[in-house]
Every structure is written in C-alpha cells, then in structure tokens.
Image (cartoon, rainbow, N blue to C red; front, side, top):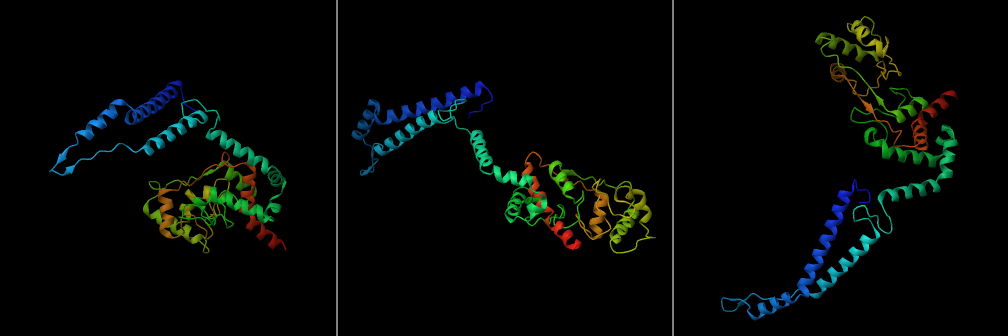
Amino acid sequence: MANMPNDFWSGWIIVLTVFSFVVMTWSIFSIYFSRKAKAADKALQENEPVWDETLREGHAAPPMWWFWFILGTCVFTVVYLMMYPGLGKYKGAMEWSQDSRVESKYANFEERFADVRETIAASTLSELQANERHMLAAEGIFSRNCAMCHGEDAAGQAALFPNLMDSEWQWGGSAEAIEKTIREGRTANMIAWRGVLNAESIDQVANYVASMGKGATHGHPGEATFGQYCASCHGADGRGNEMLGAPNLANEEWLYGGDLNAIKTTIVRGRNGEMPAFNDRLDDVQIKLLVAWLTRDLMLDTQVAKH
C-alpha cells in the first residue's frame, strides 16, 4: 500500500477506507443508540404479530457484547491505520513495508554470516568439498533452485533434464564451464531435419547413431548422411563439441533417450533444451558452493585415478 503508482489511486483508497469506516460506525450507533431505533423496538414489542392464535414472531434487541466486540475492532482499525500502511501512500508511524522488512532481513543475514561468506570466497573448491557443512549448505542451494528440474539427487529426470552426477556435460564439465552455465544459462539448438532428410535417410542415420556407442560403424548405410549433415556439430567420430553444446553420441549416455524411436524423434523434431541463467538470482558465494558440490565426485574420481 505504501507504493501506490500515482496519487489518484492513493486518494481513492483513502476515500473508500474512511467512508466504509464512517458508514459502519454510523450503522452501529443507529442500531444501539438512536431514538428512532429504540422507538421502533418499542412499537414492535407493543404490536407483536401473532399467527395461528399462539405463534408469536418474537423480538429482541441485538446483544451488547456485539456492540463491544465491534467497538473493539473499530479501535483496533484506527490504531492499525495510524501505525501501519493502509491509507494509500501513507506509510504509518512505523513506516513498515515488505520491502523494508526484506532489506532488514538481508542486512541481518549479511552481518551474521559475513565472516563465513568471506571464508568461502577465499577457499579453493577442494577446501570447500572437504568441509561437510559447506557441502550441506550447497546441497540446500541446489534443492531450492535446481532440484525441480534436475531432481533431488541431481540425476536428471523426465528424459529432458540432464544427469549432473556423471562425467558427461554437454557444455563442458570443468569448474569454469559449469560456473558459466550456472551464471549465463545455456540454450541448445538441435535443428529439426524433417523436410531435409527423407524417411529412408532418417532411418539410416538413426540406426547409425544408435550403433556408435556399441562398436565399429564403418560402412554403415547412415555413415555418409551423418558425415554430410551431423558431423559439423557432433564431429566425424560423433564425440560432440562442448563449445557448441553438441553432445557426445559415441557413448551410452543419452539425455532424451537412446532407443531407436527416441533418436528418430530427436532427428525429426529437433531439440531446444534451455538452462536459465542464475546470475541475478544467486550471488558469487552461492554459485561457488554449487560448483564445488557439482564437481565433488568428479574431483574425487580424478584424485583416485592419480593415486
């Protein structure tokens, strides 16, 4: 209420609020204390209608506890409108607003966790990964911002959102590439080949792609079509191109499904997966914790391999 777009609406709300309050107050007074109301009550009692000889309508004045209850609400309303926003642009004596409350909470958060945030900002990814409390905080950030798409376990879901717990990353699995993905987002663009390839060519290239991760494919009927239309993005060997976001087709990891029908659907209709940018939603410390959490298993595997 303290952020009315213009004076007209602010004034209109003030008029409606005050008018409604006055009408309600007048109505209560007229029912309980006006002479006309008392005279009407007396006349009704003296001339009480009777039906069927003994059936009386009956009449009783409103109980006084109603009056005291309504009076209490009126007093509360007046005090509230004096202290808090409720009359257009008037902010009230307390000058309370949702924005100021959020800003206050955020300032308290910054003050309370300033030292912890500075420690996180100065730590390496490996140091963060060795700290269980930091990893629990990172998991909480993931649950609030990422799990609705990638699943609570980050293993992907619905054959639409990729598994973040394996070593296959469409745009690169390095810490730098993952940070860029989180900050800037990604938009894939697998074009639809319907209308360019005929049904026979689609069947052949789909079979060729499906067989890539299973062994030698040299001499396959779909090899030539793949080389002409697909190799420019996915590479002649089908191992993909992280710079373009073209996934590796020569393994058994599939985002949209690796059976023949799913592959044909991808070729015919194309795919346009989108990862939104979180640079405006998450701060540097939160993004750093996420990167550390997402690369933890990968770095552990690398360390084991070195030993």
